[in-house]
Amino acid sequence: MYTRPLARLIDQLQRLPGIGPKTAQRLAFYLLKRPKQETLQLAQSLIDATEQIGVCRQCFTLSAEDPCDICSNPNRELSQVCVVAEPRDVIAMERTREYKGRYHVLGGLLSPMEGIGPEQLKVKELVQRVNRDEVGEVIMAINPSVEGETTILYVGKLLKPFTKVTRLASGLPMGGDLEYADEMTLARALEDRRELI
Amino acid sequence: MFVQSLHLTQFRNYLDQSITFEQPKLILVGDNAQGKSNFLEALQLLATGRSQRANRDRELIQQGSDQGRVLAQVERREGRVELELILRATGHRTARLNGVTQPRIGNLLGQLNTVFFSSWDLDLVRGNPQQRRSWLDGILVQLEPIYAQLSDQYQQVLHQRNSLLKQIPPVPDHELALWDEQLARHGTRVIRRRRRLLTRLAPLATHWQSVISGGNETLQLSYQSRIPDQGDDPLQIEQQFREQLAQKQAAERYQGLSLVGPHRDEVEFILGETPARLYGSQGQQRTLVLALKLAELELLEQVNQQPPLLLLDDVLAELDLKRQNQLLGTIGERVQTFVTTTHLGSFERGWLKSAQVYQVNAGSLQEVS
Image (cartoon, rainbow over all chains, first blue to last red; front, side, top):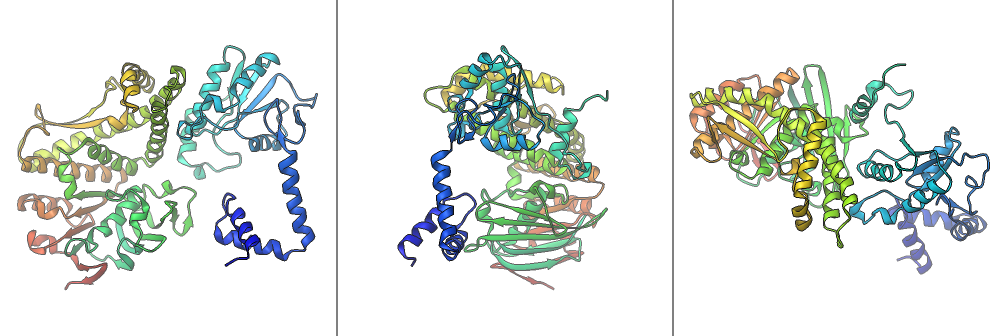
């Protein structure tokens, strides 16, 4: 039906998350309709990104430089490490502009069903780092899913002999109305309630 | 509460069928496999998010379609709500409440309450433990909608832990211990809620048991679990849960399965001193099931301060006339009731009073005058 390179393009697009056959076809036609220069630029950025971006060998986030901008910034506290599951979580934390420490990306969460155990995560590296850099606090910024909780438990137990381990509080979203919070969040917030100071 | 109308689109064998209810009773008559039960199933789905008969949403959707829909207008004491559930072959669901898409399917729970009584339930006392567990869970999701999430989370931990137990070479103890802790934490939530439910149901069921049987044996509903019942303190239950896991570890590793927890728990019905499962004729066991269903109805009514719907799927003809009359006397015209049957002749005439009767034939309805 499609001329061969087009079929290949559609096939490749379809493999992207959230894109089905129809969207893939629409995207392919759109790309071919645009000025050739623009589409080539897109292709070039794909090549550049794939070739230039690697992993920071200290915190394992995605970065074109090694060490990454955050790890090489002398103004970021060496003694505070925020542990996240994926590189995109680093971005989420950075957006707050509140955190002045460093990061450590685990590269996933414990999930036996998907064959992810401690060996598949950058846990050993985290322990080494905590000892080497004399880290005073490790902050676990991980989703409170079943897998996330288990990972927090695991890393927490491992690091406890060496440093203080904390986790993000879970509870009500800021500016959110109590009546719109889902029951699970409310129940959770109730469980973790604190006395007014 | 009263369901005013139900609209099924590409649901089971219904292409596009809507029906308005004007009477407290709806009776659906027809041969087997014509689609009578599908109506009750649709209501059960809105009430509990689950179906007793389908394992996958694909089964609920009309063959050849990729999505189906159930929509109901429900008159509650607090006002009218429109419940809508869209089912897809992919398993992805969408829930709408008064036309507004909900962030979570669970938001639909608690809006419509049903007591589902099918011929399958007649085996509740003697049947397999799974049946009794899902009976409890089906009530709990309606009483405490958050239970649906707690139970899903427990299942998730259970699956993770089971695949860990199956791993070759065997996982080190410290890794399994993480999932032990999670299983105990999440399992405790499920156990406590189930025990609490049984405590509330027991006096109501005892009452109905003696009303129906005319006897005065006490009925106990006892939650059977490896984790001993020594009070409702969550920390203590978790502790006992972990102790049981430790005891069973060798067997669990050998079988590659989690052997301790609410997924293995059970309910025992004890009449007088004897487990009802062991003694009693079929008739006595049916009395007991009827008592349990009436207790369920009463509890839902107490908690919500309005009666739930009663869905009688192919079960009325299985009860003798005396029990049919007792049931009819209890529900009166207060409880909106849906009945499916193959013959109208098999039950008391009283059931036809204030009833709409429809003949169901291959996914189409025709009013019988």
